[in-house]
Image (spheres, rainbow, N blue to C red):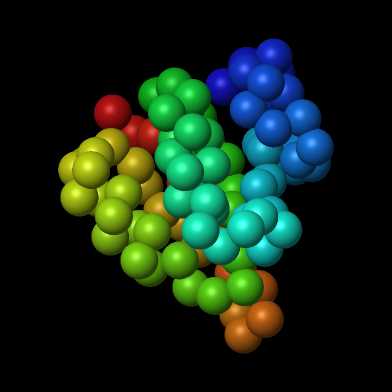
Length: 92
């Protein structure tokens, strides 16, 4: 994702070594997946972003794998108990 695309996706989110880190804890619970899906759609092959959440985002992962099988790889960077950080990379 280009710097312009990252800014257009959500200019308030910090970047970590060129990777957007999206803190979904600050988003309304009912709209989190929609925002994350927007970030997923903006990724090019090999690009990634990190989500920060207050619980394990397994339901999001299952939904993502159902909608886009084999498209994204999930790498847990932090696994609670208070914060989960997951890097999602587009692999197709």
